[in-house]
Image (cartoon, rainbow, N blue to C red; front, side, top):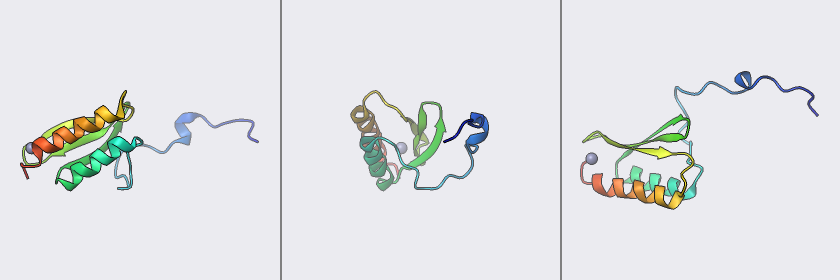
Length: 92
Ligand SMILES: [Zn+2]
């Protein structure tokens, strides 16, 4: 049993820099959509910043869509990513 906890700022490693590729989205619906996006040739960029989880990027036309880490509706967030994937799967 711990009596005292260290200050939060010291107990967490610094974010940023290279992250392992096993970073996954906490919501299965969104994670599945991200996998489909990667399969279609889009780039999934993990860039946690507040409620933002990262981006899905279409390199050829530089379009990108934000991915939220805690979407109100994971199903809708997944569909948004699928829609983006469909629209840009022809770009590569
Ligand atoms: Zn595109």
